[in-house]
Image (cartoon, rainbow, N blue to C red; front, side, top):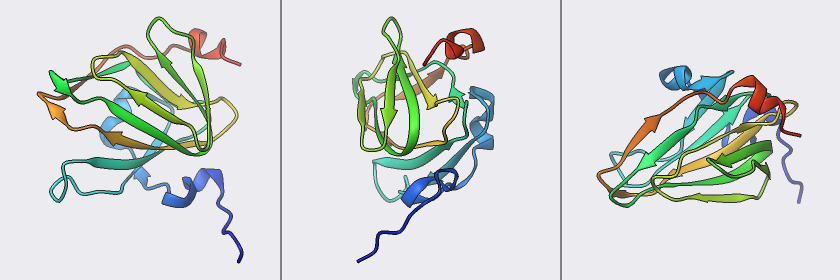
Length: 144
């Protein structure tokens, strides 16, 4: 049995989706979004997010008074994840990141690689996302 090979820029096995124009103001570079679940049919939203090389989202917080947060499952390429006050973590296919509610963080692609992850919004009470400042080039370019 042959395994299908995917190009990183195609978003891996789940597909790249459409340009993420609704949230482009919160990203440096281009990202793409492919919803995998319909929020009207389930209370768990899952989407494949694909980042072009060098693309990253702004610092942000998934607020909740109970439950909430986010889970990332890396499916293609290489990227970064960083929580405020901690070192950035290198990510590759198969890595899983559990992000508790109310933790300021960012994630995105490495400079020289496309990157895709499944983003799973963890259900909670009184959830909302707060978008903060961009990850500036000086901070980002220090990552190896």
